[in-house]
Length: 194
Image 1: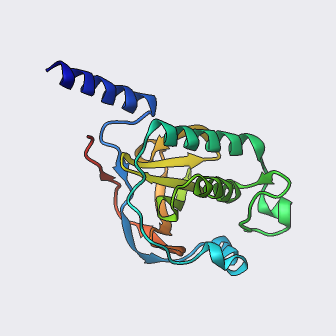
Image 2: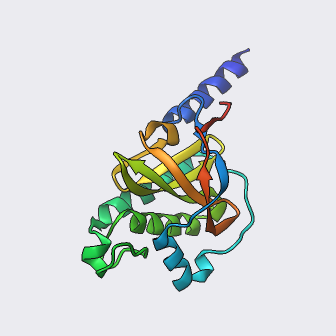
């Protein structure tokens, strides 16, 4: 009996240390949808970033992986100053890695995604996602984990489960193809907590 109590305590400490909520949720992918113009343009310039790939299971979330996610989210947020594409490039919407450490939401996402890919996360676990924030379109990075989906955002350093952001989820990259997008259907689906 003592073994079970210790195991339960350790599981609770792990969940607490990485900020996991009971019943974390996963975004539900719907059918194919339009590709944001800026992403379509990025794919024309860098086709190697926008191809088909193998769908991996959601990443097994450990303290080490959570720490990598936190460090990357916070370091990119701290190192990039907000600046619109119009002011930065003279274009309304231009997706690229942040030039001169300045960029807007999708530029932060591209840098975070590149750094997480370099740390061993797969493309199918890192989905660029369009949300509505107070009526405005906004781009975030959704990380698919075995504990649910989590959002890395340039508007906050804290990584939140999808259901805690207050955003309306519109569409995201297809898990099997970085150059295609799918609608986010209905509400997020609940993941059974282990």
